[in-house]
Amino acid sequence: MGMNKVDFIADLLADKRIDLSLKEKTFELASKEVKGILSIESENSERILEIEQKLSRFKYLKNNEYPNKYISKGLTTNPNESPKPLDTKKFLSYFRESNGLKYLTHDFPDLANPIPREKLLSIAKGEFEEAKENYPKTSVKLIRRIEEFAFKESPKWTIRKGDREIENNYGWSSTDFIEWQENAVVKHPCRSSEWNKKMIEPFKRTIEVRDGLLLELIEEAISLAFTKDDLELFEFNYDKSALLSGRFFTDVDWLGQAFYKIFCGIKDKGEKQGCFKISIEYIDNFSDTFKSIKIIHHDSKPLSDSNFKFVDGGTFRDIRNALWSLCNWAIEAEFTNGYRQKFLLWDSSIKETDKEITQNETKGFTHLLLFY
Image (cartoon, rainbow, N blue to C red):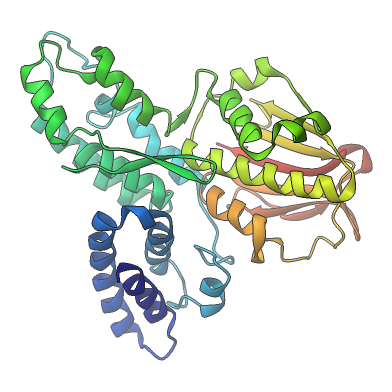
């Protein structure tokens, strides 16, 4: 029943016969309805979160319409709308520089005088709402995870591994945590080996790439996408020390999902084209603005020109949905119209979204991910 409601909501928002005032009212009611469904439909959370993202993007569409063609193609956002990965970084920066959200994952500034839980959550809630207002294009999936971790009495946030979701039911507002903190001598969960292991560290690992996590994500995605027999055939090359150094804020959970989808696509393409060499590069200072990850499928090339609508379906659509507002994403290859770099996700900092590049710059079909 819940999923039928969600599909009905999506159809209402897509219906061009509904005028602006009614559509705005539909948006308000739909937002409340989805929140209710989310609380009881955890087994369908991925589909519901896609609809929630459609709702959140609705108010940013200039023509106040969400076209049926985007919903039918499985896109969570209007492909003509620009993401804003800088919003995601700035939102998550509150966990490094703030008076409330920071101390949900870091020890109290004055160990002798821990911040009372209710006061801390009140400050954090104010910062959370401020960040949502200031950075509206932050990944919706990420915002929901933060809300569950910090403010829900019965938290249900997940960690993705390939196509699986692992649920975590611990958070600052959960009954079992409150009971522990009330009786604990050391009040911050990061100072408890038990609560740090089952609540703080799992959450921190979903909001920031750090402490070797980039290498772990890459190797995990490879192990999920390729069987042991596949790994006898495919050759992977990467500098472990470079990947170990990677550090940046993002939705780590969905970055891992994007890696998994990229490798699944490479595996399929490699088997068809007989191309089995893959290189992975991380550059911390790719430019004054960006850190970069390149995944290169050597000697592989598309059978289309650079104007092809790559994100209209299949694996590229899934990658786009996973990377939305996490980073800028381009592909580089020898297309039928020459060697080119084409962005499939980009913000206003990217001035050329489809440009010619040299043969020397192109070793094969390449995914370029640029993070702030």
